[in-house]
Image (cartoon, rainbow, N blue to C red; front, side, top):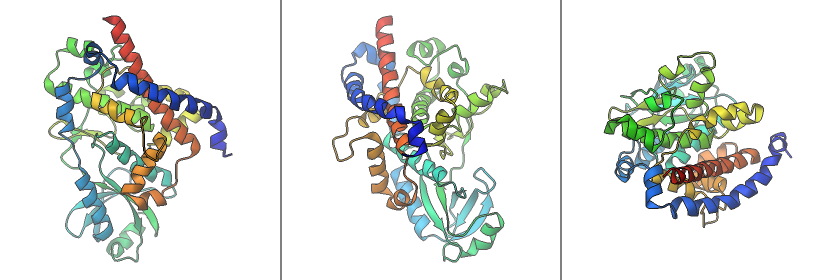
Length: 360
């Protein structure tokens, strides 16, 4: 048994309970909520439907990116896309892609790929399309920039993640309701705030990505703010790290490499770090019904994938076998944590429903 598995040993028993409980939650959350309670915990259907029709990215863009990653030669590398060794690559057709380089950190590349596909499964479509690529300096695809890549510290035969390059985006700041730590995101606070439709549209997206980031254990967005708030009291006034928006107000979740490992590991090293990850989930009691149904789908699987982690891996493998077969698989401990976090989210939604019912 691995050291990770030993440290998470107690979770195995919890997992069995979670898997049984998840099916119970699904019946409550998606089928048996009264009309009155639905109005108290779910965003208006018009808002939900509008968001479902205004995706930032599409499957076609991922297909195009994948084809370019396999066939297009790289003609130039430019600074950009975050860390010093990340590069903005110019392809022979003139298009640009972000190249994320992580030497000896395949779990970070896995985080980017797994997070992207999980985002798709939730039908959010606001994480940039991402594909895994092998860099070989002697190949036709990379030989024009091989010297430049070596000069910036890339190693031959290393893997990178190419992501869809997003321009014309701007910073995002905390909504007033979430900035005020004495308030929770509920139907009551939204009604009292007299928000514009644009503000409601954005808050509904926040409710989505709060669930998304908690489940995958993302630590370089909301977690980053709360962690640094310990030393910098102005963090809530600053733009949110790795969160951008389009000109039409659609949120874009950048840099998802910490997903499926960092948050899970931090919890192992220091349980207090879990409080930072769960902070905004605990303040959230207003959800998109369609997103809840997607999360719930992980608990009602009827195909050969019997658990949430297997379902996710099957989805990735069926769409991008190269990435799935090349990247390291999730440890047993991380598999448990993924399933348990889905259980935690569904349990929290159930609690919100009960609380709203009792308050009526």
